[in-house]
Amino acid sequence: MATEPARKGRPITTATVLRTERITPHMIRVVLGGEALAGFGAGAHTDHYIKLIFPRPGVAYPEPFDMGAIRAEFPREQWPVTRTYTVRAFDREARELTVDFVHHGDKGLAGPWAAAARPGEEISFMGPGGGYAPSPDAGWHLLAGDESALPAIAASLERLPEGALAKVFLEVAGPAEEQVLASPGKPEIVWLHRGDRPVGAALAEAVRALEFPDGDVQAFVHGEAGMVKDLRRYLRVERGLPMDRLSISGYWRIGRDEDGWQSSKREWNRQIETEEARALS
Image 1 (cartoon, helix red, strand yellow):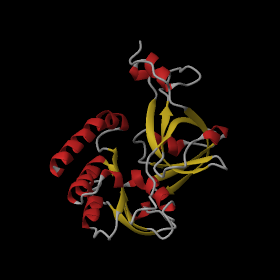
Image 2 (cartoon, rainbow, N blue to C red):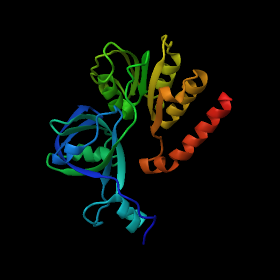
Image 3 (cartoon, helix red, strand yellow):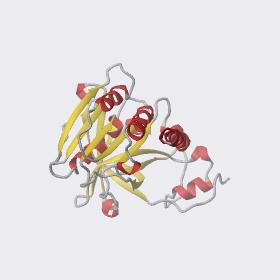
């Protein structure tokens, strides 16, 4: 029985695992390839993302695979599960798509998949989406996030204009999770080791303590939703940044899987916007 009206399905790409690499104890890199990537549209933004598709075990889906048709014709409990991940890099000439996964053992869906992935396996995804890239017109850049935002921040650092100043705050579990990050700009990178503190606490504290340089700032702040809410209020209300200079969003939320977080995210954003409007009025 149909659970929602039929709608045009978004394009789906199926790629092949070429190789994997554990780049830190909790970060796994998967490189995908294949002829289907010839028309992949990444490149304009540094926060490009894809939605990986994980079919439900035991459910046979029609070919060609069409998420819109499946959601119209299958009961919700048989819909494939999607998980959103940042495009760490895309080499159009080599047709190689790199995606980094945070891995916490058997927890979650995509992390365990990445840990078990072997060359030759296939995976399908929708996308890319995205909307941010460092502006050459910014006086300086603020980049802040936890592990979930690290791939986008790393990609953004690689796209900074030559010599551009960036204040970068990255919160990770501990020293072993740090990565070497390259940039043509002049980033000042601060690694924050979480230890036993709540996720985002050290990050929010560090950004609030930053003495802002002179000049127009462009900010990119992403990660756990509670931290994002705190820093969004700080940057929008206390610092007066306009939204057109700010890319900020909760990539995930403590205690929710992606399905639960995405189902409540719109209302969560609406509440934040209402609070901001009151504070700014």
